[in-house]
Amino acid sequence: MFARRGVVALVLLSFSVFCGAAEDQFTPVLVSALNGSTQVFPGTDGRQHVVYELIMINANATPATLQKVEVVPAADPSRPIATYQGAELLAQLRSTANTAVDNPQIELNGVRVFLIHLALSAGAAIPERLMHRLTLLGGRTPAPKPQTPVVLEYLAAPLTLTNNVPKLGPPLKGKDWVVFNGCCELSGAHRATSQTVNGGLYFAQRFAIDWMRLDEAGRLVNGNPADVHSWVSYDSDVLAVADGRVVKTEQSLDDQTPGSLPDPKTITLANVDGNYIVLDLGNGIFAFYAHLRRNSVAVSPGEHVKRGQVLAKLGNTGNTSAPHLHFHLMDGTSTLGSNGIPYVIDTFEYAGEVSATKLASDNLEGTWNDGLLRTPSVRHAQFPLDRAVVDF
Image (cartoon, rainbow, N blue to C red; front, side, top):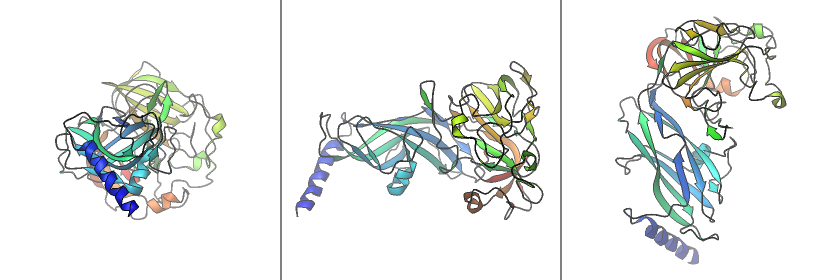
């Protein structure tokens, strides 16, 4: 009987907190979108995608326990677009150090990053502005000591959506290029990778792709995997995705031996990307190419380039375990201290996806072309999603 009374009291307290929606409300967990706006982009799965992050800070002495996060249209908060709770909520929650957390509780002054990926049908109406409804157990008042937590519910974190994604040409040429570590899987090497650089928190790689190529037999590597020359991708031409101006380059670093990542103690902000190129595409948009072969960069800072121009050769330099081209767009010249921008490639052919089960084995040898389409389909203005195989 005592436990049941406690439940009733909790419900009454929570109702008194959020029944007056028109009045000011005490909100112990501060919530904001990391960036005030983001772009909606079409993927190779035929759906519309939205990817962004929320920052959550518990400003109350009472620990706050997240129960539910809902994404809602600002114009009609009663109709959730997405709901995260239970195990799914916990899976989206991260520390500011890029680590998963083992429970949904946020301590006093604790900070969490909440990752959001919306995948909406092609015909779905996309609101111009989103809000986020939080349901949590937390402190009811700004008392200096922990209180008995009550249920709280409130709206926070407005986010503007736009459709002005950049349209690019391909960064490579030829058939059977595979998207590894692509958008928008939490398990990939890029999506959840934030960096604290230059006094800020950034997700430069949220839309990054590691491009690797299959040969006619469906192999990524043919021969000794410890030899960079055995990898099908190695030494491929890397192309300008649009007209632009070269901002920064590096080409003095040697290839790593494939098979494992370099010793983390040897990785710095200066060498993590290996040899690289940054292009200014205009309108505050910059293209980034990483892990290029030593002395292969054919352009210099200040030089203007044309779409399709060969910029360099694909290599295995920097923080990499196998030859590939790392490519992403960003909103600044800092390769880690900028935020990633989605884009679409104007025309390519889609040949299906490589196996998620095989990818989970972490073994890149063998064949990868099982189940691919015999006749690839032509795609226009789409973003190649994780595990996609495309022809340029």
